[in-house]
Length: 120
Ligand SMILES: [Zn+2]
Image (cartoon, rainbow, N blue to C red; front, side, top):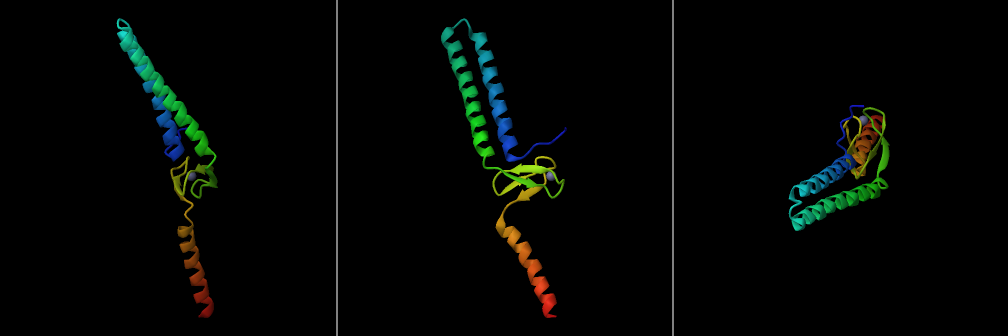
């Protein structure tokens, strides 16, 4: 698809994936120390900790996914998920906001203009 992911959840997902790679790399590095079982065991435990950490992060993503809000992007008209008040579109990186104060300002301006027109 050639999609440039940069929304919050995708950033965390990339972080979790890199933790797995680091974990496997550390465990693989431990093989070079097979002459001393203590060092090798330490590498294996450290690598395992990275993999455990990534599973925790993946679990966290699952928790966050339940809090995401589905919105239709005003720029590309695709349904995207956003986390928090401000996030970017998963497809076109359009900045999105759910901040009610920003929406309120826009509405107030239009409202004032209309009332002024009616009065004049
Ligand atoms: Zn978009």
